[in-house]
Length: 361
Image 1 (cartoon, rainbow, N blue to C red):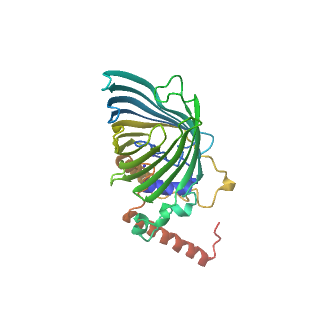
Image 2: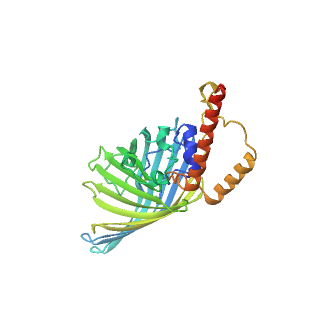
Image 3: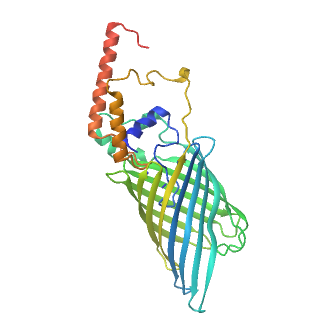
């Protein structure tokens, strides 16, 4: 899930729009995959425990499933590229009521490795991420152009090791391709969609989609999501609906819980998952030589009490939090007034220097 404050909004403008974010970028609690990578040299673990109950009305079977989900993500070589391993190891206890016996099935129901690359970043142009200083509504309202998404592509392989009881007859390696999109509808709503073609090269290739909508609360450390998943294959087809909530405890740590169900009874599925996401942040911004820096990027003269104000802001940030990475709450009305005041001062100073004949370097 596949969830930033006003300060982060402006920091993006000055650091050149890398994939890296100050707050953890997790695909949990749903199964949808964000269009963005975690950032170069960032290692991130996303894991959870799951329980599912399945009942098949035609076969007259009942199943209890326990499992462990895990995803290990690494920002490889450059900001837009990510290496990702995803796995789900589960134990299924299935009872065949008509035959009067039970059996256990244990193996990976998901085991794949792939690369994701961002091919189009909707906010790469700094002008698209600058707030409107004269309209609070313009920053928070919905616009149709917000539907234009950032887009990434994924290519990888699914591994079927040994005699997997969940995928009998499948080869050891099959292939997977996916397109992931991400749109920021408003500062509090983010829409993610995935279209994937999986198990290419097997007798049962699988076409699937995922559509996820997330929303940040007034306290951006809390967010909720709803997700729809569709699966089409000769082996299994279904439509699933899930929803859940996530909480950001720290910039590098998030916990979540979600639950969902299927729309049919062959089998009927009810499931719940609880997990966490944690990142080890070894990211470093690429240094920019003095020759390549633009005028004014070094901040200008140090103002009186600047360090006191900085400490106060950092203390407030630590208390309130910045919120999830893909939720951008934008400037408040008070912050907009302050920005407009600073803008007028800059223009007044610039006009004064021109009138006095001073040379502006």
